[in-house]
Every structure is written in structure tokens, then in C-alpha cells.
Image 1 (cartoon, one colour):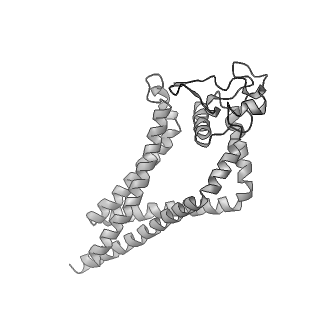
Image 2: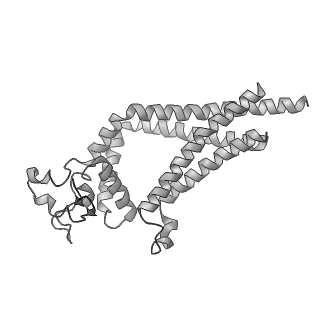
Image 3: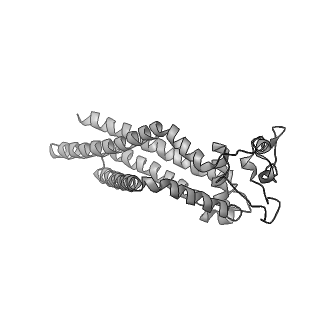
Length: 247
């Protein structure tokens, strides 16, 4: 049925629209959290990695609109464009899955190297610091088990960032940026009441293990809807050509 097929493809576009809005929201949230829109930082916003999420979200939303308009207006050009782009996305995802599968035994090593790089560049790279802080806050962990050594210059020598603290808020309102000072010279019993002692590498691994079912389900659903969208778009194109041929 021609109309039924058109309604199906419009429904399948809804996932792309939601996904685009989620990615777009993450990009905006990242820029806002880093105060990238502040007057003193607005000049460097063009090099902010969060723009990648912002651009990706915008493109996914635009892709959805392309398919919707193509279906509503029976525009073969837009429907073909939608199908080609989704097929490219599917190919990229399949290649990524193959690569991830072949290097699955090395993933922990890559994560370890990434955490060490984040620790090394924590003070100098604002983007690395932002990502590291969000991981530490979200997983309640301590970087890569160890932070600033005691020979490091500055007040954080023998300390850890405040995002590793158990209770970085004083009186529940004021953020204490010095709560992790000298934490590394404390005995384990004292330190565990001040900072999180578990490393973030283990925290990330545990989070993935705890949510692997959800991650797999979301991945299968997203992949399946993309396949379905291309299939229905192809059927719709055939119906449009058939309808025009009999007109």
C-alpha cells in the first residue's frame, strides 16, 4: 500500500530526529558547562571539540528533515539522498564494529593509554580536563589511580582534583576546589573518607559490564531502524515511480 509505506518511512525518521536532538543537546550542554559562550572564551569556540557533537547533531536532524520532506513531497531526489547517506552511515558502523571486534583484547590498553594521556594533560588542556572531570564525577573515581606526584609544582602536589572528592561541596552549596590537597599523603583509612580511591579505568570497565545489555539493545535497535528506513525508502521510491507511470 502506497500510503502505508509512506507513513512507515515517516515513523522511522523519528528515531533519527530524536538521535539528532540528543547529540545536539550534548554538544550544547558541553559548551555551556565549559562556559565556552563566555565573552572571554567566545573567540576560541571555533576550536572546541564539542562543536563536533553540535555539528553531528545538526546533520542528523537535517538528515531526518530530508527524508521527511522527501516522503511528504514525493521527491525522489531527496529520498535517494537520504538512502545513500544512511547506507554510508551503516557501512561506517559495520566497519567500526569489525575493527572493535578484532582489537577487543587491546581495548583496555587503549583506555589505559587514554587515561594516562588525560592525566598528563589535565592542567594544560581544558578539553581533557572537562572530559576527565565529568568521568570522575559520574563514576565517582580517581583518574588513573594516581594523580599529582609530590614533586609537582603548585598547591596540588600530592593532591587530586576536587572532582575526585567524596564531598567537594562545603555546606552543600560552595564548591571546595582544594578538597583534594595532600590527599596522597593520607593513610588509606583517612583518604577513603575524603576522596574516591578506585581508579576510573576500572570504573569504566564496570559501567560497560553493568550496562552491556542496554548498550547492545540500543545498538541493535538503532542499526535495525536504519536498515528498515533504507528498505522502506526504496519501496517508497518504487511506488512513486509506479504511481507516476500509471498517471
